[in-house]
Length: 297
Image 1 (cartoon, rainbow, N blue to C red):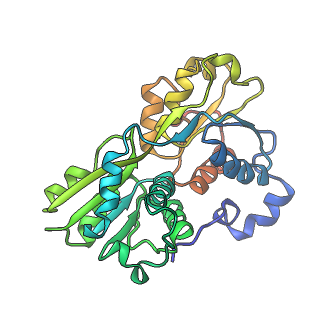
Image 2: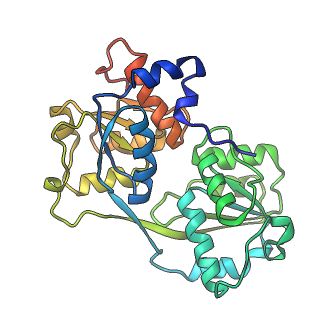
């Protein structure tokens, strides 16, 4: 069972009373750049800690450009030994399409009660993705890596399980980098299929930077490389943020790498690559550092 830990619990129970009386993010105005749905989740967590937020949904989730490969994988779903999800959006869009192909008549229950998935086990990149799998289907993930990074999903799974002669399905975003398929092939997997169950696209209407309210913003969060790309396409640059002395917080090293490549100065990278880990890293940045304006990366 994967437990979801709130950012309040993560800072330690001995500090809860202090946090409630003196919110650690009070006075911070944080720009959120996830999807509309994702921003709601992050907004609630940050506001509990005293922050005010600016909602800028920089990306939206759409069907992939071509459904052929996804539909083919769904049709042969029982042939796979492992089904891997690299995001919660991948879980939701995959099973949405599965229901559509089944005319909505399939009731998804635990794997051992559902012949549709045959022998397949499920692996998820992190606890948020595993929770989405449980909520969508009732299925418990058989594997979640200790380090919630895409490559580790493959490397740690190969260390724990024998994947030789296994058939593996990887469900990901259309515009995600293909990093983990070769790892399974190198470890002897019989077949590795990667399919796109969704694609991310910018939500801004093309008017660019004037849509983004940065006046008074003190912090900005990036939860995916696509959010970084979308803000750049909207006209926001690292130089703009440096002029305003806006701190940039990234959910993990892949997102941070993209932000640096795009010219942003990254102030924090979450140690635990989840939304709660992102929130925790922001809290620690303003409560544990003698000079919180200092750039660490």
